[in-house]
Picture 1 (cartoon, rainbow, N blue to C red):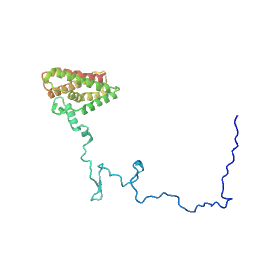
Picture 2: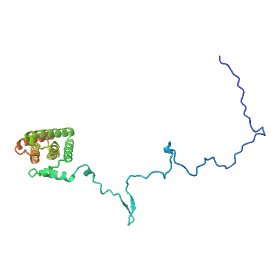
Picture 3: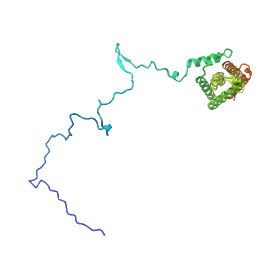
Picture 4: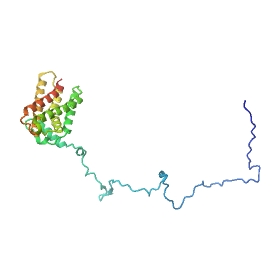
Length: 255
């Protein structure tokens, strides 16, 4: 059972009824209280770095930015110009002129210039493979993964076959082999584009396939024999291996 306690009331003295207590009055128009500011402020508190608002104490930036200065003609001249910066393709190692020259050399199967292909690259072959896959996609076939996988396996196959035939004197590396197979895919790309306008299952498309396969085989064999030593006496075997590679790619177009 709860007990009840009697709490006396609290009475606050008021100055209204007591004349001895002075009344505090606020002067009208008085400014609010402001803390005094020192005449010579010292350094900011090191424990509170975010409370420092002294702009003059900030160090100058050491980054080299282009400086704009007024020119004599009324315009502005930039002292740190970007003319010395090389192009993006050059920084990535992509030589478009060299790719065009190699492409033109592939178009003539009877006069192949092997000197252009001494500097191997994968930029041109990648473009040809993507174009081949795009034309296959227009035909309703999604073969991007198959194309990239077959090219990799074909490069390993030709690399092993050629070095086995050449023995210790073979100087064909895998990177150059992959570059040559990719550039010699150009006839297959053209065949894939033309097959979109030819009726499949007829004699014409099979004759076209034979012509373009022989074209790729001849070019790839000539480049492999010329660029790698000790390959002239095994030209027939190298041509047979190249024919097998490009015959597989033609089957992707025919069926």
